Image (tube, rainbow, N blue to C red; front, side, top):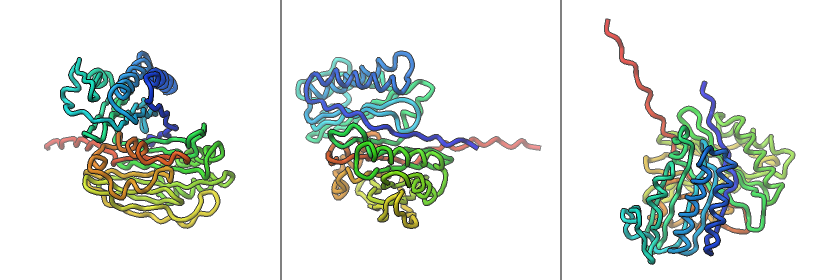
Length: 349
């Protein structure tokens, strides 16, 4: 039996690009993260270059820009996501041409970024801004950089510890994700959240009620937490939650199936978990987020937001709708793609 592939998403490193000196800060943060991820050879240097190029573009051509750096949600490596509210890129094809630059629009260095990154995704809209995600993995783990899964996990402003956390696990043909919100914020909330993730990793293949029950029991000697668990297969998702962790599904035209967890606190009082089954279309993206994200973002999302892939959607929602006084996590995911098993041709008698 295959062992489940599981991964905890560490708190996201956030670098606001509000001055030219932030370019160096972003490069140093990317190098340090690559070293913590144990990326071999020249990959830490490449991570620093990717962050430097993305930050330079924001500094020169955009406003309200931020880099979000984190470990990949599944597999080895890291990702660097740049978000801004600049003018957008009028000619994306030209922007990827070596030597292309303009004083009015973003574009410098994108060709080099695309060549250097294991996977690179970019979306832009005039008057809205640009989002770009560069993922970097060792060659033998390149598939991890193409997973349709994104996450941002940020502590409250002025807090060192993050009381939110999230994780993902692939088992068989399903993908299961969890978002945890430890009560309050600070070290004790972070302790509860990490305890919940350890419990999740022990039973990622269990039913959703059993996962929540296991988490509930593990939190009895902590301050407690809210949590939402989502399992996706082709064509369908299942959701169960306790506390204020929200789930919804985005299609290319609207937000659907907005759900909130049942009243209760894991570790203190938990009702019998109910499982909600949600149909998924091929273009659906499921979203889980804590109450550090203002829920109004999903009432009338823009067409641009609805069309974003998971790797960019998480950063876009966090950047535009985070409540800075609370820990904030948003996780975006699509079902796991499982290639069909080749059939051995039957031999003729």
